Image (cartoon, rainbow, N blue to C red; front, side, top):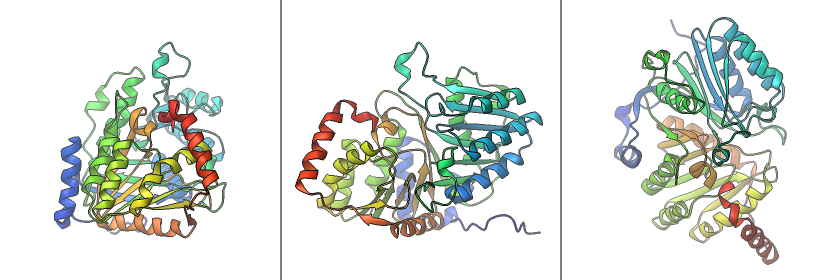
Length: 400
């Protein structure tokens, strides 16, 4: 019998990956050592109206475990609803583990944490701001991962806050994208969760090493990039460099904060010189961190003479974190194309080789373009002002 409630997803068969798709796969596996898993099912979720119901449905259906890590847990109806849903499952006896970034979750209502803990959930703050290891305080977990029963997982850019509710209809509803994942890649996402769980002081336990292997459920090739903070750049940077270097036709980048390393800027210029089309879709007037917008303009300026197109989203805050390459490869996760994501924070990105999923995300990009204007050429006075601001920010440029 067909499950009529299950979304219809047409994922590529691994056998249908052509020579260039295989080259993109090899670029990731060679540069990072991360292997793609087969037989995954990926569902693209757009904006809070699709993302939150799917996550809450998965939580409600949990029977034995829920693992959840997030940078943002702020306020609003969804914050209360999500915390109460987790607490309800903990009261039922489901093993619930929650990691809240010590900085990103500061606005969270402490009563919700109390409710979770009283229900039996294990709640940890990742690197609390008030601690003696002050050198760690600037290294955050920026991941957004939910794993339910080691069977279904979610990752992307969405935080648990009212800003993400709705469908990006106006400036109060942020634009974002999430993936829902079933299949072998779920274990890799849970491993990224465990990286942060270990950081909070917990050892790997029996439930972590005896988890059942997720059943093959689809036909999508997927690789989980665990970008753990360390000295120098993390795997997220190597992933970005690899896909840009391997691109042959087109690169589309959607990111809320654009402050790439010089190495990545050089790779993008090299791609443009060999004929690769480059589109950047960034926030417009509703950016939540205006200084990041100033830095972004300074960083993409060298790309413009090489034909890169830059678009500014006008409806609301553009928070999508996606990279699309050559109509074959799509990356979605918590990674911003900025220095902080690749040099300081714990991040995660799901890379998929699937024409149907990439086409769906490309269609979303084309729809977003309808709400964009091209980045305008600056007046000379504005250019001088921008350069002065960027020069003043240079000592803290890694923060943007």
